[in-house]
Image (cartoon, one colour):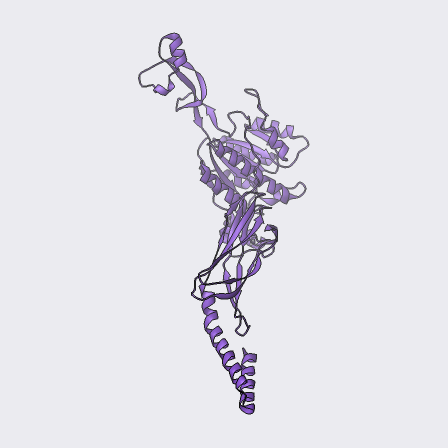
Length: 427
């Protein structure tokens, strides 16, 4: 702007000295362009309307399309607008959004790009930088921003359609001699019709054969609640890359929760990991787009402050999404050891709840912690993630202490749970 003023002053001096009308004409036009730009540019930025349209949740491996809508709500055209979207390295998929467009009065333009869900997490998407100015570059560029949005990438889920585990394990119901309700999926036989029986229970084929009304009978059952007790105290993981095994622990928790909800069972989540969103004063990392974690010093000063509240057992798809969102953000950290935390973390659970204890190994201390849960009236199941040479000893120790134990250190181990087993057998 200073150079332009100096140019006008020089032209004005030349015009008076040389008495040339053309120079006066150039001065009039230049001043007019300057005044027009000074009036138009601030209003042009105010008239720019933008928004980001995309699915705010994604599963691992999905490609997420993102649409930027940019509109001119003013009565005058905008000569040019430059768009530049910030996308974290871990999310980039294809060419980034960096374009220039002109918008006439009332015009709306759409721009498309995509991101890919390579790793679970809670990511920042954006901000979108907008810049506009006049055609001659006389007036300084006007800068605006579309604030950043957020994308939640759920953990990878390994399908577990048919686990085939015994009914005492956390996948459904247990037999009961107290006839609280009858499970239509568990037929037991037929009997004579009694007053009050539902007409839908009548076995018409058997009734025609016996010439008496006969009704179907079913095995009584009690529905079980399940709580996933996810240990993310990082020093408890000692085999190989502890970060990879902690990620595997989160994937196992997500897979089991998804399976239980798909079976219309109630499931909850308790973890001693940290949720960076609970105290999001650290912002996001510019390179990865992920939430910045609290420092080790902050966590050690008050470990429980960063541990999220338990999600109580519920059923239904919305509840599963709530669990997956928590598992997307959770991080392993040095908080509270499993043996010091497991018993107190389970105090709010109802009697008889099955507890899926997902942890690193089946050490003596871990087994004793789960034995205390048995004595408190719970049904704990140990799922150890680190490979052990002779897990049979752990399994036998667990059996003596009153609970089952499984070693699940690769996806293949989860797959073997899908095979059907004879009645009364254990995998």
